[in-house]
Image (tube, rainbow, N blue to C red; front, side, top):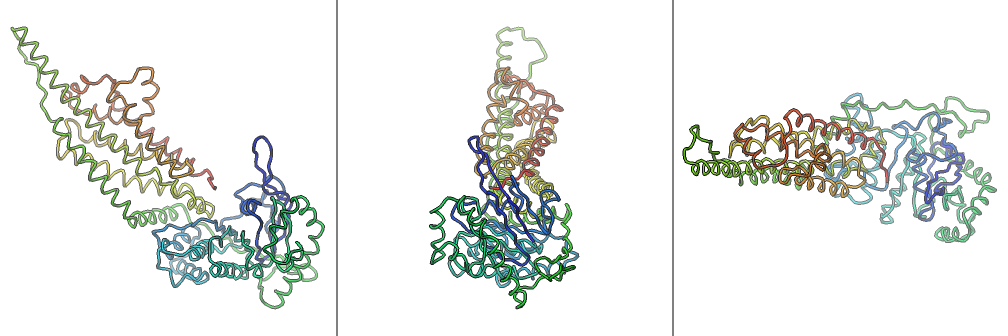
Length: 586
């Protein structure tokens, strides 16, 4: 049984406490199908999230099978299912693949046969078996709602919460979904709570909970709804609610709640006696044999898959989504091919010889001055070209890093939050992202280094240069991944990541030296500087001197550059982990 005792949820706005859910008290027995209705903004979704534990109650208590959830711990992931308004599946995947991934992330199956049986059963229950091979992106609204239910049913939850799962559907699809929820509530004593704005098909529910401004205005059998509000049609209930303040409706309900509670108990007893409602066998029963008071043994709690199992499922799914997104594949190929070509266009300017000073002293002062000018001209020409090409590579790889991860978490945040609610470990999720992005970073960076070196040899230690190119890509990818995990929307994450890359070039000091007071403050945070400085340090002595002759920015030791870029990667991953752990439900 689910019981709420004087549950409230308040928010603070403009210095005062505003109750979104105010002193809600209800009892919902096993095998019950309840609708939560009310005008827009009355607190329906807020109440559902409070029951789920997404909103911590400000007052009151919630009990599940006589367990105080605020003291004895929240629902286990296998006990509860939550179907939000938005789609919780990836468009490129098929129905079968979506349900399989949900099962692998939420249930530790004994073997492949157990996994297949669970998937087939859920698809059959929700009527999705005939379309199991269709991609999510081609499903209708009603089919997507069924898929959302299927992905929750894989763990056999005893409490199923549905938030506006019928919104936007045609009347036929709406009735089919309500009928499906009704049938689901009749199996194994499952409680189904459905938030809906619609007042159609109320006869399929066991009870109706009407909220008005966060307070209970009615909770009783659907056939008593019009009688209680003294209206002739259910569509008149909302206008009727607006005629009185919520406090008066709540006070009126407090006087009549016991009589309506008895009506629901009688209806429930009739359902049980007729066989329309079948509950799991009770272990003990109180005197009188009231089935509502029977102590039903809790089913064995399903075990969550381990870290490596969830990681393997996530990384496999991520690669499948990547290769099915042709636009993303073509973009990556275009970047990998075109960016190195852009660099090689300027490589000829960096291949010129640098004239050395002659070993013999010139007797003619004019000839000596001319020789010095010629050497300096060679140094300036080659040094500036090499410095510019290195920075060009660094900036392009920074742009690749931003493109890799700016939307990686923020773009799928609603789905991730839903899967985390179902038992997904944030560490497994972040590890799968790091593994996927690491593959992109390695391919992009090494191809950039080898392609440019193939058409114009790097004039120094190529391995060190390639290492710094790898580190700048890894650093910017990790930083943008952290941004993606901390931002609420993909658009915010993308915009901030683009600005970050845009500031890399001017703040690095590779083109124009910054004032020392500014440089000392900005340098530790500019990944491009450390990659550029480290690559310059890997040049041959003569070429290195040529670069130093045309820049005013001081260079750092290579070890310092390695440590700085490594620190950027580590700190960014810690920030990404913190962002991934933090709940960000809308």
